[in-house]
Image 1 (cartoon, one colour):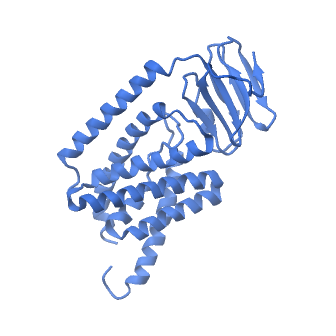
Image 2 (cartoon, rainbow over the protein chains, first blue to last red):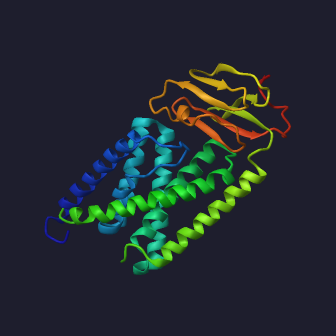
Image 3 (cartoon, each protein chain N blue to C red):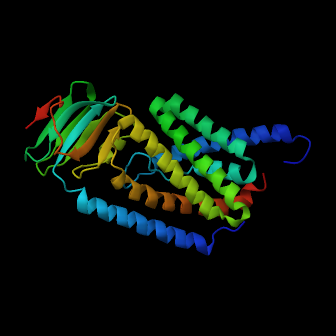
Length: 168
Length: 128
């Protein structure tokens, strides 16, 4: 990213990552879920946001999250768009704050998990606002556990994908 | 930056214990309260269904023809059929514990199981 044509390369890379995010969310929607709870997902497309966070910059990550929200709104309606957007923005804000505090003391797993967890929590906050009076005592444990699992999946995938991605 | 640290493992264990405690509290104090189901359309309560009547029936709501609900004799309720593409609502299965809910976002419908001890004078409709 440090050479002369970096601006174009940068734009192309962001666009490509966004396309990948969309493909991943389609793939994810085809995976049958054992439980279906509003806000709970593996967050495969989060891998892309995570990659952008770690190896491009935070603005690109936010951009991809916002584009994802717009795409969801266009294809699946306003509510889905709002959920995607709150989830994405929540997880990025939390990751940025954590990175700011911990810097190199953090770990990929920690950031992935926080991102996944707050993606779910963000979506659930939005659902609670839309549908009022959701029982947090019932959902919070589920959100915690699925956040941990999703974070593990994301960080493991990122670990294996990274060597390939670094060749871009 | 490392992939994972020992601290992360403790954090995960802590979170799991916390989640377990919350869930235990929920099961002990909330889950088995006498329940009713509330059906919302566009965030407005449109129907309240008592769950402990022992009746088995299939019904629709006026607001949406796309979705069929099923009330089971064992006191649970479910989205039985919906024409939405993702079928998340149908896959949510049978609900009977206070706090559970299922949503059909494409059809703007949601079922929520709530405790039955609230004043119900603003209920729109009663079954059973």
